[in-house]
Amino acid sequence: MSRPNYLQVFAGLMAFLIWLITPQPALSCSISFHQGVEALQTGQFEDAVRAFSIAIDADQNQPLAYANRCLAQLELAHYSEAIADCTASLNQQPNQSEVLLNRGLAYYRMGNYQAAIADNSTLLRTHADVRAYFNRGLAKVAMQQYWQALIDYDRALAQQPEDQSTIAEIYTDRGLAYFALQQMPKAISDFSQAIDLNTQDERAYYNRGCLYRWQGNFVAAIADFTTAIALQPDHASAYLERGIAHAQKGRAASALSDLKNAASLFEQHGHTIAYQQTVALIQQLQLTRQTAMG
Image (cartoon, rainbow, N blue to C red; front, side, top):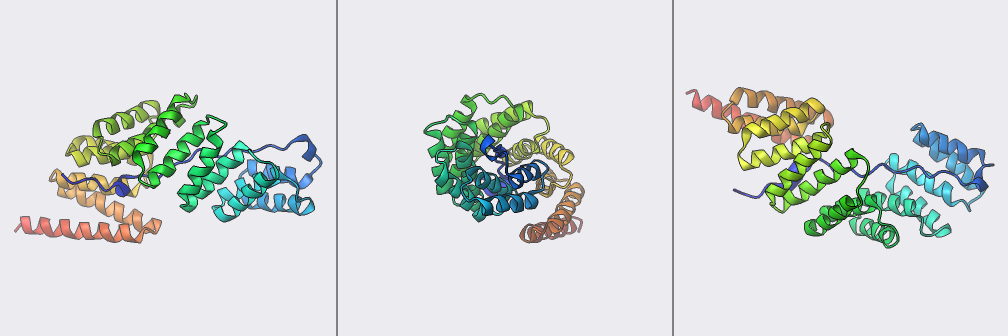
């Protein structure tokens, strides 16, 4: 049995929500600053950037204005700008744990994994922060440093996070690291643990389904993909994997139905390569079916 394609199994990394950095009393007179905070809290991120920019233009010595503008830039996927703002904030007020965490997140999302690891490591020298351990683990996985990532996931769990969904998230990503290392019983255990903690975790169902399908346990795989689809009806990859599992079980009609749904969703989402690959699978299955029918 060949090794699974990890990138196909991977459902997408999730970093923890960034935390709003609230103003100190010295900034209470800044109307623009408070307008920026209100915009952040209500999800108006472009308005937040504008408000914090006005505050910074009036007085550039405002580490919290830079830090909060970084949050808005992160939400807008403006990662270079977020890094610049976090750096400006740290230059004015070093060793801010939240700012280091958020700059590390921006580096991670830009694909600069070494810099992400460095920022989280700097934070961890003074704070045993579950988010920093988890995010550093994500960066190490992205660099295929799976064993090192497992250490960070273990340390994150050792912090005993109070939120059940947070613990489930860590188990899911640790399961993915075990999957990449072909530690299948441990991967299944972690995915199952994540599901026990959060029955709405479609990533855990999807990835456990991928593992079951790879092992040849098609019935269990189909059940997990079905749950993942119920939780996220536009989950194109779950339709794809369930379709392949049906095909491997000899259920051509069900396989074609799922593969067609997957192709449609990939096309809607603009995933051209996945769409083309799925269409090729459909054509291959149709040809095999026609040949079998004579």
